[in-house]
Amino acid sequence: MLVAPSILSADFGNLASDVQAICDNGCDLVHVDVMDGHFVPNLTIGPVVVEAVAKATTKPLDIHLMVENNSFFVDLFAPLKPEFISFHIEEEKHPHRLIQKIRALGIRPAIVLNPHTPVEAIEYLLEDLDMVLLMSVNPGFGGQKFIPSVIAKAQRLKQLITAINPACLIEVDGGVNGENITLLADAGVDVVVAGSFVYKHPNGVKEAIDSLKV
Ligand code: DX5
Ligand code: ZN
Image 1 (cartoon, rainbow, N blue to C red):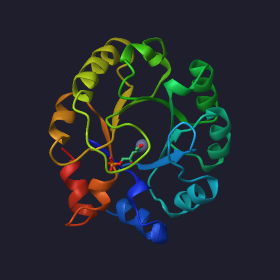
Image 2 (image 1 turned 120 degrees about the vertical axis):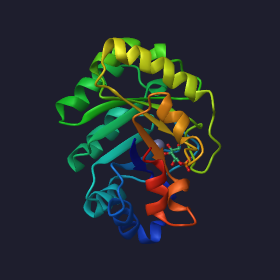
Image 3 (image 1 turned 135 degrees about the vertical axis):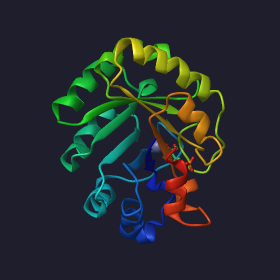
Image 4 (image 1 turned 180 degrees about the horizontal axis):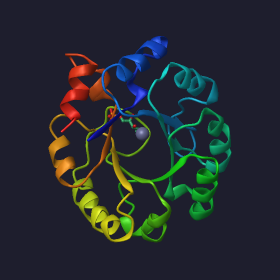
């Protein structure tokens, strides 16, 4: 299992050291939640802060856009050379065009599905994607409760991916912890995002990250 801690649960007063802490303790990607206050009822960070994260990290960035104007935000973050940029299918009229744009910028394209969105919504995009992110909470906030139906959804997506594009990764985001990690691994999930579980773990980020590496 690859582990992508979400810096949304970090201490923003000590952001650089909180980013270094996950990088020094075995994380695989640094997950960055960009919210615009329109697509989701929360507002987080823009290029100035993400630039500071990019400076502090020794691991690749996984930028999760929760915004209305995806193409504009792709242009904003592309100079930071993230590994992945993911955008929500619910908020994009021309997803195929945007996938091509992200790839042309040298970034790996990913699509995010909200809890209600069926995997069939992206069936004809799978061959062009490097990752699909399944939300296991409603996007907008850290620290929410895991929605268990994502397990069956991941299994179904795994079948489609195996048939269409086996190299495409499955990522799950929201409410991931030491209890649901084995179910996620068994369902074929490759990458988990974890915010509060990692940053609020009583025994520190190393133990939290280690316990997700199943
Ligand atoms: C929610 C974000 C998540 C969030 C995860 O909209 O996409 O990445 O930070 O936080 P936890 O792991 O606390 O649910
Ligand atoms: Zn996220």
